[in-house]
Image (cartoon, rainbow, N blue to C red; front, side, top):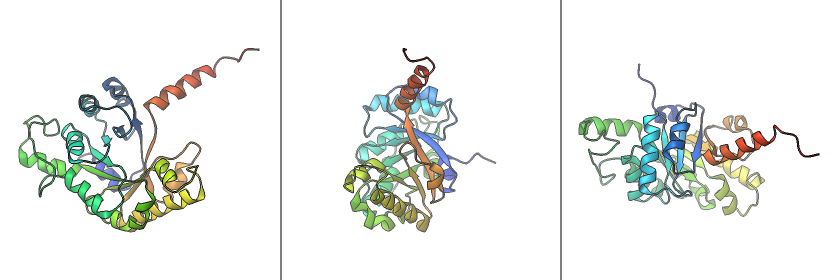
Length: 254
């Protein structure tokens, strides 16, 4: 038997915990590859990842056998192509508002029919060591496409987005959703209600739901509502938390 790939685990509803990578460092990726996390999501939307930094980080995560998602900046064809050719397991598409936008993201993430351009010399294709048929088969089976829901305008279109063939997961972008709804806290009732709606849409259409939860919230509560993928904290947060933990070991000045 073969080990289920990340996409299979996600689609089968396996509970998974990952984190965001904010530092463009292959060494940090190498370290995260030693952890029991289910995946690392490179935050190319908000952190300073150039093409070479993205490439080296994906190489390190791939070498460690760590599934790697890339949250692209805007979801253009070039951004998606670069991430997937460099060896990303999948992409997180920000600010998905309509079913048509979701379908376009899926098309750009897969080969054929005007979609992702083919190159057999990429890392994803094994630098020409895989046949075209083998790479097409592997890519179709493993490429993961996640639609990030973070806008008030997306809420009336949740069914259309979740029903889109090829969308593997709805990911709740809680902070931008909070701002879009005019709230000042991600725990505001209007925000919680919107997240409930996203979870419900995922359940109706058999799609995984992922999310970031603010500190203090219980992942188990959201698991009961259908969420299975949690991307929490980041490499930067780990350093800050680690430093605070060290400082707590000495007594404060009298």
